[in-house]
Structures are given as C-alpha cells and as structure tokens.
Length: 513
Image (cartoon, one colour):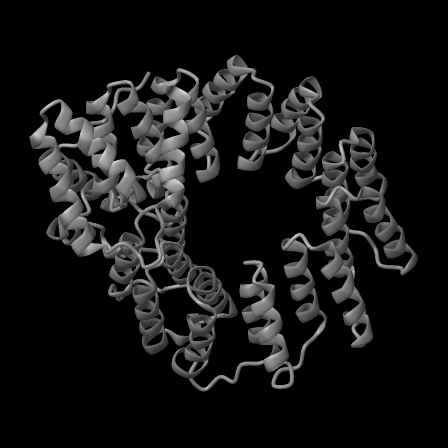
C-alpha cells in the first residue's frame, strides 16, 4: 500500500528545479511519453500559490526543446490530469514567447478547452484575443465550438448569443459566419438539452443562414438527448416536410432514441426502414443496436448484432465490444462479461468505458472481492481511470471498509501527475474524517489546494470542525492560508455549485453511520 505523500514546499521547489533541469538536457523530437509525463507532472505538482516559483520553474524548460508535438502532448496530459486551467494557459503562453516554438491549432484548442472546462472565461477570451493578434491562422471552427459549448453550459441564453456575436465581430475579424458556424451554435444548445433555446435560435436565424441536413440532424440529436421520443418523431417529419433527405446520421439518431427508451422493436423497425431506403448501416448503427438490445435485456439480440459486424465486412472496435460488455452486465451475466473482458484485453487496448462498465456490474452484483481484484489489476497495468470512474471507486471504497484503497488510488493519481476531481476529495475526506483519520484528510486537502484546485465549502467546514476538535490550529491556519492565496490567484468560477459535493458527503456519512 502506498504511503500518503506529505508536501514540503522547500523540498518540492528544489526537486522540481532539479527535475526540470534534467529534462531540459534531453531532446524531445521523439515525443517520448515518459518525458511528456515528467514535464506535465512538474507543471501540475508545484505549489500553485507560489507565483515566483511558477515563473522560475517555467523558465527552466529549455525553449529549444519545445517542439509542436511535445507541447501538444503535454497539454493533452494536463487536460486528462485535470490540471488547473491557468497552469495550462501560462505554460502555453510561455511557449508562445519562445521564438523557436511554432504553435499549432491543436495546442491552442487544448489550452482553450482546459480553461473553459474550469469556467475561466475571462482567461479564455484573453487567449483568443492573443491568438487573433499573433497567430490568426490557428483559429478554427473547433475553437468556436469549444468556447460556445461551454458558455451555453454554464452561462445564460443571452450570454451565449452575445459570445457568438463577439466571436464573429472581435475574434474572427473579416470572416462572415455561415452555416457551419450556425450549426455550432445550435449544437451548443442541443447537446445541453436546451431545446427551447435551440428552436428559438433556429427560428430567429434560419433565414440568415442556409440550414442543411447537418443542421436538422443537430436539432434531432438535441431532442433525442432530451429523452423525448415524440419530439424526435415530430421533428423528423418536419425535416422531411422541409425537403431534407435523411442520411445515415439521421437514422442512427432515431434508432438510438428508441433504444434508450427500451423500445427495441421500434428501433428495429427504423433499422429495416433504413435498409429499405438504401442507406447503408455503419459500425455505429450496429453498435447502437447492440447497446439497445442490452438496455432491453435481450442478450441474444445483442450477440446477434455483434456477430452481424463481421458478416457485413465491418471490424468491431472498442465501442462495439463495450456495447456487448454493457449488454452482459445489464443482463447480470458476469461470467460472459468476464470472458469478453479477457478477450478484449488480448485483442484491443481497453479504455475507461470498459473498466467503468465492468466495475458497475461487479458493484451491483455485490462482488466486492472482484472489484478489489480488478482495481489492483488496473493499477498494475498503469491505467489511469477518468473522473467518473475515480469518483465511483472512491465512493465504493469509502462505503465498503476500503479507505486504505481510497488513499491508495488518490496517491496513485498524484504519482501519475493527475489532480483528482474535487468530488473525489469530498468523498475521501468525508470517509477519513468519519474514521478519525484527520491527518490524512488534511494532507489530501492540502495537496489539492497546492495543485491549484478549490475544495468545496462543505468539505472545508467538516475538516475545520475535525481539526478544531483535536486542537490542530497550525494545520487549520495552514489550510486557511492556502485557500486565501488560491482565491487571490484563482477565484472560484461564477456559478460554481456546491450542492453536489454536499450531497456526496452526506451520502457517505449516512453509509458510514
């Protein structure tokens, strides 16, 4: 079992400087994953509240080594590691200042994505303006989509429209937005299931832009994501009346809508209609039907459609395998699921969906021993789970006398240069405090804050009560100082809610009694 890492700022600064000096002596043209991980960890792990240390550390990275491939990979690692958005932003801006570095759209978009995911919209606009002035060729449709999608998710309808207008007038200067940009705006609302807003935008602007089949599919997808099959059918007929011809994407959306509502018979009817219309089903179509059969608890049909893939001269990918795995899990056929998992590990590189699906099935079947065994197997393979799986595992460990494994997972993520999500901290600190492990709860919270991530108010208050209870005023003052410094550098994004964190903490407390 790994031991909880205790941060000592003076030693951290010394180690990071030595680490970066050793890295800067290497050549990065090969894009070695080990080197990428080392640089990303250096950036993610330094105490964020020490701005002077940040400036010195970035300067230690030798400019000549900053190849486009390296920067893209480091930013990709920081995105997956849930690094603070401003750290990623300042790393990218540092790279831009180096005359030898040639920036790419991919690096810029990754930085923009990290900032907007954390709701740092002011910094995101600042980044867009910098790119507009210095490297306008990096501005793409994807950058519009990243910005508008996040604003639609976290801000109001009016703010989203204003942002779209600002993108056209202030960022993409001289470019007249057309159908593709219009589709991006519609997709931003549709993916958030804001169909009232999406229809409003469509009705208001469709005469200004020229809608195409993709436009209609985006709206159809929005109705599907809302779970309203009737609206999907109504809009499909509206699409036909407007003269748009359905394509394979249209049929896939309709099939998926019925599959998710457990109307597998209707999904099959549309599949037959699709083939009669001479629209050739794709691997995605078959994968959707495999998943739909699983939702309907029809494992026979799921196997039939999986076999159909090879009969149609298609090749099953990880998505198709995961759909069949999900079908086995939904039908509580753990033996078949385990056998399929072994087959997948031999043929493919399993992904987070694979692990999440099998964990979920094992947990529902109350096979605690198998969950623990799979966790150790996953760690031994150096696989780093994504946020929802981390939160699910942390909650499971806290509820099933596995606090040591919860700490082990936390340390494993830190060792991999990742910063666990605040929900994972909420659960872990709640579990630790309920068991009297206040020292470990404090250390985890401190590590989170030092990496530039806020802790939720309910978790802080709980830890505050515990530290006061045992007379650890020095630790509480240390925590308060870190929080105060972090709030100055990284204010809590507007609209950040703590209700979910409060609910998670309460559920674990109830479980632990």
